[in-house]
Image (cartoon, rainbow, N blue to C red; front, top):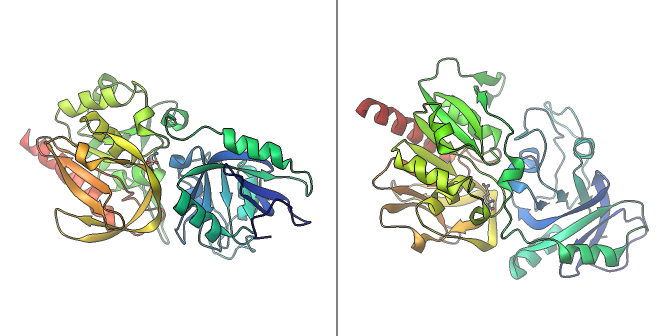
Length: 390
Ligand SMILES: NC(=O)CC[C@H](N)C(=O)O
């Protein structure tokens, strides 16, 4: 069932059909139906539930290169959002019965309940090499009765699917209204904590924020107020924040509407400490006049080496991005602070004349190593220093 071919194996209940016409037959997992999106691959060996619920995957189908996905089941704590935004998932092996003390539900049942369409039994190494060699492309996953797939229609659908380039998706996953957040990171034996004595206030703009980012902010001492992506600079400032956080999120940063970049430009002018992650990093770069572009090979995984040029230290990071900031387009008052040791991509910058900094990767991990957590402390120190100096 692993060979790419136009004729299904007898029991195939799912097919992965790429825009270039490549077909992989397999066994359906999760919800039935047809999922359409940009096919990408993630190399993390843990954290499939966090990955499937990261809102930055809106409009995408995730291929897991790690072969054993689902073996620790799912639970209600490892969710990065309540409604997964990813469209579908591709697995090498069918999930086995889960074995983990935290598991409450099988991955198959949890994905079915959330409408996530998956396929197992696919040669995921072949999919990954195809994406690596040919660049990003769209695909569909069909999951239904064996023998009932309309291959021509699926190929046509994959071909006609819109490119992620030019798509504004942050607006589709942002929260509907402002809310307060006080949950702090999960600890073994204790679960989540609460921030009961915050030292400063941060407004987090939600372009598709992962919960663990909000937890890390609360954990470093912030009273967090989360506002929708459409909140204006005036509405944000009305909360009298000591710092502003710009979240991760899906889609093409350059395609976000008037709601994002012009507001960020106004926020920077106030001189408030500002921190951006991933899409937030890209939007900050656009706000200072830099440009972004789609990458031939996106970074998605939990073992991506990045060098902090301000300290010389190398950190192993969690990443999920398919666009990047063009380093040479940064203005003179921006200093490159982080670079990828895989391909020299810009991974972080700061402004030299404002308390503003951002990283392209995910210091909140979930999944991934915690090497980069120091960035939340850097933000907290920047806020406290700005408060004392004022
Ligand atoms: N994780 C993110 O915020 C992703 C940012 C953007 N959608 C990208 O793919 O580059």
